[in-house]
Length: 380
Ligand SMILES: [Mn+2]
Image 1: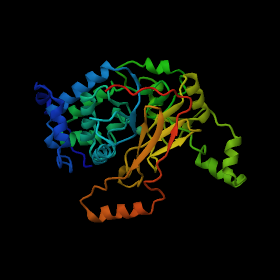
Image 2: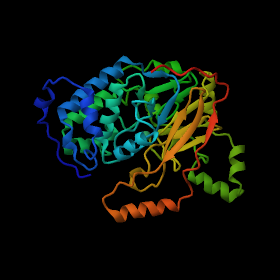
Image 3: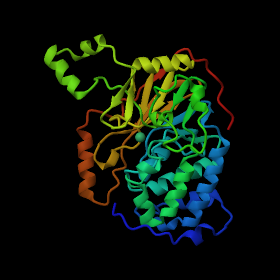
């Protein structure tokens, strides 16, 4: 996206007091064609400021760690892919009738971060007890100043708006626990604590630099199958039996993630320890692109959900959504990129490339979380 200089001429506009009605926002965002291109001006900046204000007051009233009940649909990273978010709702149900939890990373990378975050905030305001958003590492100014959101705010509105969004992000919850059994975060667990209570105690406003615990929750990843790429080469040279070697070599609980730079991998053992210490059974998180939209790893103790299909326009991954029904049965559904492009050549190429991928719409799977007691669905 072309970056234009920021202006701060909106100070007067932001203080204009108009009665806020969230339906005005939804009407504009969901109107066909309003956001089919980069035509942002249909959403007045004053209305967005009002929306941020309302969303912040809802977040403030709810705890830092949400306690949720089933049934629920869980979505991973969206990253400004507004058309794909609309497609997701059309395919799996709009929040008017379905309960949702989103795992963070709403902005950056994609070209439509503003309508994306506005639609999610609007649903949060409209259905505060049925629609939930937790924070991702891109809901932090050090990231979204660089990866697209600031530029988009400045191109279509102002730097003031970007600052107001980031002020609000400091009030987003950092985790959710479903039926006291399934922990949901954006990244992962932290070496700094083995207690869920410590996470519940994180204070607001919570900046990304509040603590190592906050950074870990937003950033960490489960250990990959192989410790490092170098390790892979070494192992292959030594024995040629990678799988066996890894089973024989215990991994440390937390290792530095040199791929991302400043975060950590947590081992299967570390995760199992955290879950059992807190009487939990499963971690559900986003943060990593997975080609089929979701992955189940770490001995079925870790689920990664990623809901930005064809991430960054060239990854050809599917998007995934996780479903947890009233009996705590977990299942997954996947969806393709909207292939939204005015350029027929680009669209055709994307569709053709997709046909050669080793995945299809029939690979949805499901499992039952063990030892869970079925609970009745919540009243809406
Ligand atoms: Mn992330």
